[in-house]
Length: 390
Ligand code: UD1
Image (cartoon, rainbow, N blue to C red; front, side, top):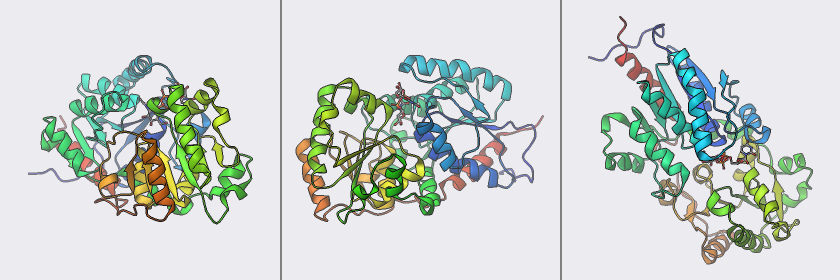
């Protein structure tokens, strides 16, 4: 028989350590923390920030926009090679786990911090809970794919965003008792912040750029690129900027530039490929700014994972500048089209969207703004069930 939910959280059951490290973690963790606090009884949490992202634009601004609490602990690891960054997170996270004695460690997504904290916890016998489990690009050259596969193999509870993720996990031999399909917590954030989105004109103004550039009848498109495969090689980055420059002649494009991309445009001396009247370069945007830009765009061109899902939820056509996606539901049901680095495909699909023939898609199952509540209810029951006071 299942144990009943107590009125108060057992004092002998430690907090849930919730880990964030990099930008795409923040919009996933914010609704989870709120759902844990609202659960009856409330689930105690401890927010640990590894410090993988640390710039104001990449970090503080998003914390404010998402109304995330100040982290209880910041490990301040900063940037480094994959090995150094992962190792440093592990080295600094271990004493936190020793001291705080958590009931479990909850990680989200697929960044280096996700895997690093998972490895520390699991080797100490602390249960690991992975939110956004089971996504697979089947491209092992992507660091995120390695992080996903390894995290899922050792995590105790796996919450999935789409049914294909559940199938992927089953194929990897993960027992179904460990897997729960709950929907997409990132869409919880999007739906609860939709009304607060900032206007695109305000985003330009904040960067000291004439807002009239996006206030024309024809509208604008939005671009983000940061994957090493797209921006770390001069010839690839130059070709991508070239094709985007062509599209920009028909539709002004607003870029939200990741520091890696900005740095590489300078390092490879590619500034001349940017047409300043048609390609508007903004720094990394806050959450509410990005939401406003995407929601008002005619098209989004991106290599991000999260934007593929957010554009599907917003009904905005998205062209993904990658050869594969770990989020196939955005293609099958949503507004996403994979174009890779096939320049003919990029030109063709962009023209289709501009001619009004873009995908409009539909909202996938359980992308309903309640995924975090499902996780809170399920995790609380799971922890109480396992807990035997002595
Ligand atoms: C990380 C994630 C990626 C995610 C992306 C979102 C991994 C493997 N990758 O990639 O999945 O899509 O975040 O942004 O975890 N930098 C700054 N300021 C910062 C952070 C980084 O200037 O606050 C610069 C540094 O030069 C750093 C580089 O960006 O070396 C890359 O940062 P890193 O955290 O290693 O990976 P991302 O490319 O941001």
